[in-house]
Amino acid sequence: MSQKVRVRFAPSPTGPLHIGGVRTALYNYLFARKTGGTFILRIEDTDQARFVPGAEQYILDSLAWLGISPDEGVGADGPHSPYRQSERKALYKQYADQLLREGKAYIAFDSFEELEAMRTLYESKGSAFQYNALTRVKLRNSLALSKAEVDALLASETPYVIRLKVPAKGEIRFQDSVRDWVHVHTSSMDDKVLMKSDGMPTYHLANVVDDHIMEITHVIRGEEWLPSAPLHILLYQSFGWQAPQFAHLPLLLKPEGNGKLSKRDADLGGFPVFPMEWTDPQSSVISKGFKQEGYLPAATLNFLAFLGWNPGTEQELFSLDELVDAFSLERINKAGAKFDVNKAKWFNQQYLKQSDSKELAQVYLPNLPAKDADAFVQLFLDRVTFPQELGQLVHEFSQKPHAYDEVVLATKWNLEAQKGLQVLAASLPTCSTWDADGIKHTIHVALEEAGIKMGKVMQMLRVALSGNGAGPDLMISMQLWGKDEVNERINAALSVFPKLVS
Image 1 (cartoon, rainbow, N blue to C red):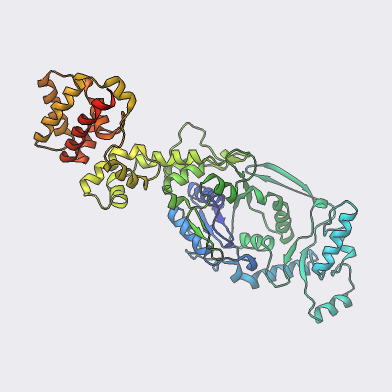
Image 2 (image 1 turned 30 degrees about the vertical axis):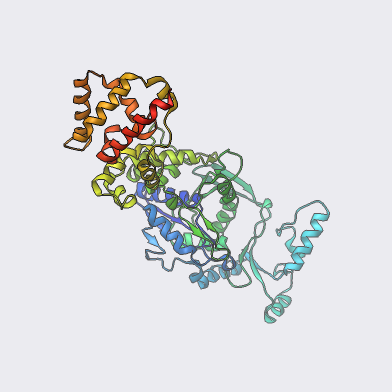
C-alpha cells in the first residue's frame, strides 16, 4: 500500500454516541493500527439546529474510556486543524464557488413554500418530486433565469442555496470494500444542496472537501451512508480529485433480527445502546450506558468487533492488540448484525474472570478488609456478569439462611449426617488457623476420628451454613463467614433440621 492509510471517524454532536457509531470508530481504529496508519476524529457540526451541548465531550469521553482515542483531530490536534466543521466555514464556500465558476453547480432561489407546492403537485399526479435535470429548468435558479434576473435577486439579498448540477445522463460506479461494485445512473439522483442559505455547507460538501484536504484514504462508515456514496463520488469527480476507498458497514439489527436497532428497542429490552450514560440536557431523561451498567471496556470492544466482522477462526476472546492483528476489511460481512445483548454479557463474564481480583476488590468492596475482599472476589468472580453485583453478593452472603434446601434435607438428612454436624459443631471452634486450609484439615481430622465419611456430611454442612445445596467453595466461604458465625449457623441448623424432616 503505497500511500499511508488515513481514516477518520466523523460523528455529529447531536446527542449521545450510538453504539453503532462506536463500532464504526473501532473499525477505523483497528484498520489504522493494522496498516500503520492514522486515526482521525472530526466533528461534523454543520447542522447547527441539531447541535446538543455536551455531545462533543461525550464522544471524546466515550472513545477515551474504550481506549480508542484519535491520533489526530479534535482532542488531539494535528496538521489539518481545525477539526470542527463549524470552524472551517469559509473553506467550504471557496470550493462551492469553484463549482459555480466551472458550471458544475448553480444558485437556487426557490423558497420552502415553492418547493412544497411542487412536491404537492407531483404527489397529486402519483409521482415523487426530485430537483434534477428534468425539473430544474422550471424552477427559480441560475440555470432557468436570465443573468439580469439572477443579479437582481442577489442584489436584493434573496436567500439562496448552491446546488450540485448532476448530469442528466451518466453512470456512477465504484467498488466498495464490503459491497463490491455499486452502479447508479445519474437520472436517479437529485441536485443536492451543497451550501445552505445560512452560509453553512451541507454534510455532503463538507465531508468530501475535508476528506480530500485531510488526505483520507479510506472512508469506513455505516451502511446508512451508502445511498449518499454516488453523490460523493460525483463530487470527487467534479473537483478532479481521487476518491478514497469506501467500506460501508452492515446495520446493527434488533436482537430478534428484524429492523435497525434503536433506543426504543434498548429501553424495551432493558439494555444500553450508548457507550456511557447520557442525560438529555432538555428533558433530563437518563439513558443507560455500557460503562455504568458494568461492562468492561475490553469486553465492550470485543463484543462490538464481532458485530459485522469475524476473524475466520474459532477464537472469540481478543485483546485490542489481537483484534488489530486479526482485523481486515475483507472479513466484514454484508448482512446486518443482530445485537445479541446476551452475547455482550457473556463477553463481560469472560473478561471479568481474567480481571485482577485485588483491583476489583478495592473498587467494588472497599468496606471489607483487603484480604477478605480479595478472597470474596475470587470466590464469586465466575458467578457474576457485572462487577457491581459483587456488593449485592456480599450482602446476601452475610445473611443467615432463612430457608433450607428441602430436596437435600429430604434425601441427605439422617442420623449419620446429624452426628457429623454435631462433631463439627464441637470441633470447629478449636480450629487454630481459621483459613480455608486450616478449616479443611480440622473437618477432615474430626470426621475421621468419629468414623464418619466426609461425603455423608459435606452437603448437609453446606445447607446448614448457606441454606443451599450447591454454591461456591465451601472452605473459603467458611473462612469469610468467620468462626463464630459458622458455629452459630451449624447450631441453628441442628435445632431446626429434625423438625423440618419429621
